[in-house]
Image 1 (tube, rainbow, N blue to C red):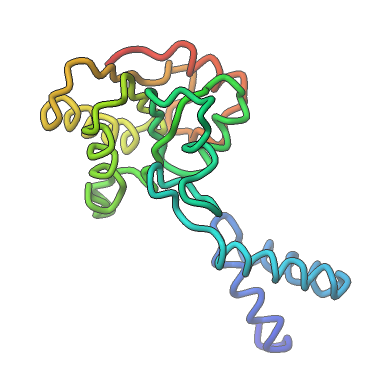
Image 2: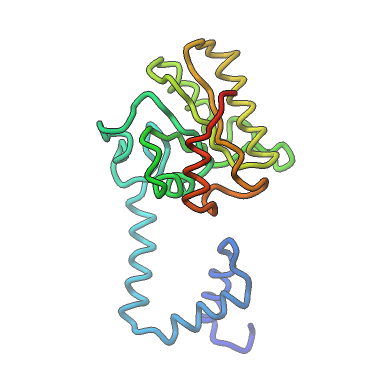
Length: 203
């Protein structure tokens, strides 16, 4: 984009670094902002900075939050003995929208991927096992995304629970397979997620 002003080219370049945003979409977003009122652009800029400056990870479940522990972890009305393990914070939002699940969460922030050199130390598996070792959990729902990486991650967690922790009272379940193979939880509709939660099976 050598024929446009450097600030415009720079904004297009930054937008194009976002996941799922190609050059054409980045250009459209840039020119939308150019046409927008200054106040709107300023609010967008301030919202981005607020997210970067005020959002932290919950020290218990590793979901994104402004307060530690997060509102879900400190909610006494939720079932404190069930933990649903998900890959990303967006999966928490998707499950919460169903209104079915009333337990706690643990966010891994990724899935194991030997091909991409993502190992156990790169995601929050050890933190999960440490949390379970406290002994107050009766059920762990492995809600990783369907597909090789999600299934591999769930299998490693299950083995860690069975072989490292050796907690015979702890029930390990997974979501029912109403979810399309290879899809992410965040893209599933609420009805599908509700049925997957209600139909979970023991591993």
